[in-house]
Image 1 (cartoon, helix red, strand yellow):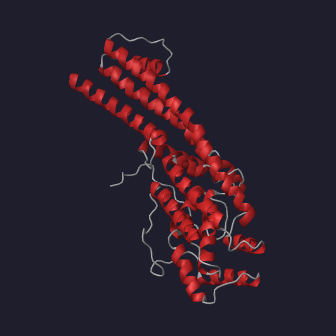
Image 2 (cartoon, rainbow, N blue to C red):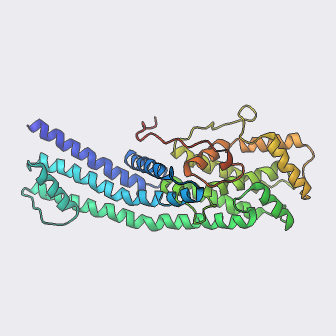
Image 3 (cartoon, one colour):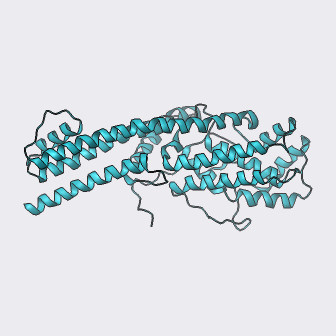
Length: 361
């Protein structure tokens, strides 16, 4: 019997430890990391939402449903953690002498929720009761404290996404971005814009990997998305760098690199498979040469100055695009991004992730 009590005590400690670890990784740890409790909850919830969306015939309805996905997932984290802590401490109380399951759960729930109507007898059980009450308060405080941080990062992200619609249309496209810039004579005067988006990419990389639920926070406008906005900005930079006859600008290329590094970091969190050192044409891109030529023809018809060597322009553009092509399309699928040119329009079909996945080696 003693061995059994020791075993149950250790099991209870493991449950509590993994719960605390999940809370710390999700809200406190300032780096990209995941925990199986949090991931399993969000994957299970995504399957429930996927079933609900099967009855939604239009994208607008599916977007309206998915808008609740990340907020509901965050709100369910605390009850999930509390339930696990309750079970873990019930194991500890049983192992320390409270022999009935009903009594164990009653004492654990009373301590966790600080109700105070169930008492314990021994000093060890009293200390367990105090620690459980403190842990319950900490878990609730974590969510309350970090929600403003998350919504602040979300709001800051959306400012740039909304501003992009002025320059690139809705949904955003590189073609529209370049045409509008040409009309106002700004094609060779976009230095500040590239700095702004380089900073935006750096901020998204940090916030969307340390607080990964932000990835699924949807824009207030159904046709806006941080993923398609990122794709449009990078495609614009790649097109101007490769095909438009303007002076070379280092800041534009730095913005491009910041962009694909940002998307790769987010993709790493969700274990998206991609080649970290891709080379074109050994690794193809999702955009066809005919599509590239069609865009160049539209730019030329609008009077945009283009480089004369179209073959080199295509190779340069594909050489940039190959760095983010796969991860951009994968994130479009993962986030159910709205229709947009050269991103969502060729993204692969969504496949539910397994509920439980092995840890990274």
